[in-house]
Amino acid sequence: MDTLEDLRKKLSGAKDIKSVVRAMKAMAASNIAQYEAAVSSLGDYYHTVSLGIVAYLMQEKIDGVIENQASPKKGDKPVCAIVFGSDQGLVGRFNNLMTDFVTQSLNALPGTKEIWVIGDRVKLLLADNGLVAAKSFAVPNSIDAVTPLIGQVLVEIEKLTEKQPETEFYIFHNQPKPNTGYEPVMQRLLPLDEQWRHDFNEIKWPTKCVPELIGEAGAALLALINAYLFVSLFKACVESLASENASRLEAMQRADKNIGNLLDSLGHKFHRLRQSSIDEELFDVVSGFEALNAKPIK
Image 1 (cartoon, helix red, strand yellow):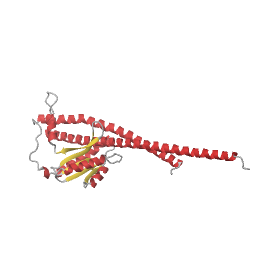
Image 2: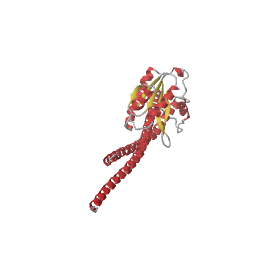
Image 3: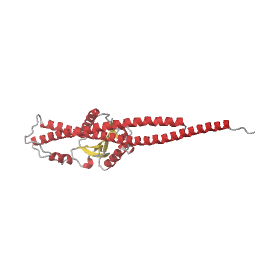
Image 4: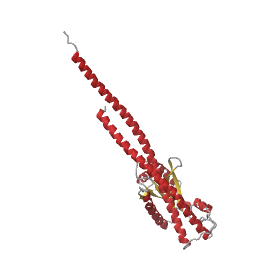
C-alpha cells in the first residue's frame, strides 16, 4: 500500500512529466506553423519555375510535352522509392502508417526495388517488412537543414540515373490534411509523368509579350527541370515534417490528458490517505484523553 511519502513522490514526478509534455506541445505547434509557412511559400516558387518551362516551350515552339514512346516496358524498369519518415519517437502511428503504405504500394509496382530512407524509425520498420534501405539520410531538424538534405538526394538521383537511365523514382511522404491529421501519399518524380505533362500543357503565359530565354535553351531547360525536382522534394520533406509535428502534437495532447487524469487520481488518493491519517491521530488523542479522565474502578 502506498504511503503519503510514496504518493507525494508520484505526484511530484507526474507534475514534472506534465511540464515536459506541455513544452513539447508548444514546440510541436511552433514547428507546424513554421513548416506550413514554408509549404505556402513553395507555391510561388513552383509557379515561377512553371512559367520558366512554359517560356522555354514557347520559344522552342513546342506545343506541350510529349511522352517518349521508345521507353522500355514498365515491367523492365527498376524502381527507386524515396521514403520520408522520422528519426524521433513520440509521433504516434506516423511511421507505421508510412511503412504500411510503402509496402502496399511497392508490391503493386513491377520491377526491382531500391529504397532510400529519410529517418531511422521508418527504416527499421521497413526492414521488418523485408524492405532494406540501400541509402539512408538524417531527418532535418529545422527548415534551414532541408536544403542541404535535398541537395544530397538530388546528387544521388543523378548518380543512379547515369548508371540506370530507365529508373523510376517515387516519393513517399505523409501530407497534412486540410482540416486536421495527415495521410500518406505517393508521387512519381521521374520520369516526368502524364500528370506533369498535362499540367504544363494547361499553363498559359500571363501576358501578350512573348518571353525570351537568355543563353542556351538546353541549359535553361535543364536548370528549370532541376528546380522542379528540387521544389518537389523540398515540398515532400516539409510536408512530412509538418505531419510529424502534427502527429507529435496529437500524441502530446493525449499524454497531457492522461497525466491530468493521473494527477487527479493521485491527488484524491493522497487527500483520502492524509485525511485517514489525521482521523487516526485524532482518534488516538481522544482515546488517550478519555482514558486519562476515566474514573478508577473501586
